[in-house]
Image (cartoon, rainbow, N blue to C red; front, side, top):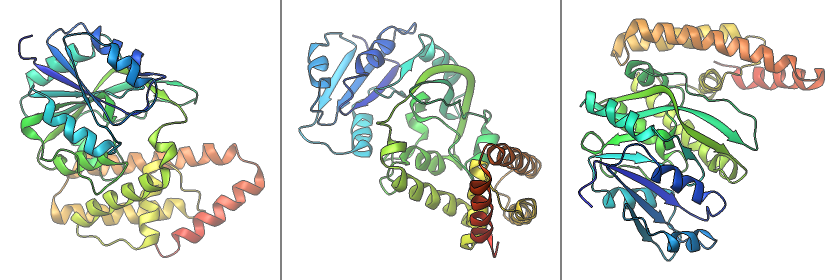
Length: 321
């Protein structure tokens, strides 16, 4: 096989239920010049049997005798990739057949682009929608202040524009968000509006199994970015900030709280020039509007006692903001 132009990195740990579909979705890509690097992180289920049966020359498999965790596995896999472009893939998702072709075409058109994600179609045992709302580099850079705007298994990465080691290990279960934040100030991140991945929701996802650890990592990542604006938010202000991230602030004073915190962010940004002023101002306004609307919708669906509890809880947490 000639040297591939794209390396697809697929970490595996006890993914036997879904692994075959994920692998075959890559092997049936319309773009032909790729290699598939599968790193088995000590699986003990039927994944081992399936991988032992694979005979496709485009597939290279590395195995670990014991489980080292996703960050170590990803960084090990990066070292095995031979191509300047690396596409991420998860063992429980399904790539659309044109995914690699579409992303390779866009990456070739812009050498400054470091990370290229895409929209996705959710499916599985939980009703959900795509959360991809930001597409252009400046939008994504501003959105990172509040949330992870890029879906990890959709991305294609340009190795030469990313830090090493690629995935930092001090933000467990939010290593992708940490990577975007780490490289966002110096590199371009973009999302394609095309839905190039089917993203499976199931009970074994990291966001379900390790939610508390993930939430704490995200909190620290958000805080490091707020501090780059010269701000040291108190717990109440940080609560308002994170509420604006996930669109739910049921405090009776929500509009005033969001207005005051947005004003602080705007003044700090004008002083430090981290984000384009007009775009940042527009993004904050839209985020406040969206939080107000989504809070109203969620509260309206609750019984009265739960609605009152959330209002009181939110008011107590935001005192002092």
